[in-house]
Length: 290
Ligand SMILES: [Zn+2]
Image (tube, rainbow, N blue to C red; front, top):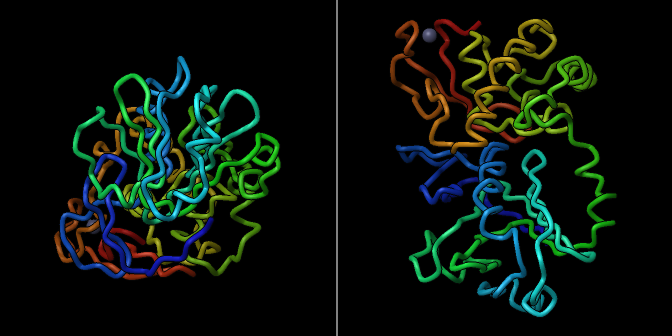
């Protein structure tokens, strides 16, 4: 099931922190899920769910209660958990798999059973419990129980570019080729978000990679040469992979959410503007990013 949400949302990240994006002016910005959020969710979920059958399955949200996943997944054993770009896949022994995409609003949380949850139980679309811990998916918005074959043939998954969160997977030549196939007039910041070119980069990493390599994210992609795009990818890969393993609180944050404050490199005030087809809020320094 897919649900459309408004542009301005206050959400919580997978580690339970309040986050905001498009349209919000709140401070203490926390980003919406990106590839490293999903990979880190998988890192936290695996020790809970792998190793034996599920002990309890619940669907507290009225959105998922009618699906009877508690019956379909009763006593199911998790075989493997994969993150692919911003998708999380939980494969069960047999033929079922959960396919999740958090988009702007969803989150995964892991809590000890009985511990307070970071969001209301009514927002919990699914709770998988094992070994005294709950794995909770909040607020969908895309969560489906599918067959292994449906996952294997899913066109959205098949279309993903190399996952920058996976060590060794980034194929820069392939990413550049895909980016060059896209609209040459689109902002280069927007091109970095194209999951068919490179999977895993979201809005925060887009802004930070552009700042780190002194690239103005609003430039048309055709005005930015391959070397500069490759440099942004090379800068991002080891850092996002580190966060994928160890948590998104370790992300560099030089410009994201810092509009009006001085650029740490040149002191010019950081600006914020929506760019690209989805008008994603973009932060950059007009003083040193060209
Ligand atoms: Zn600057």
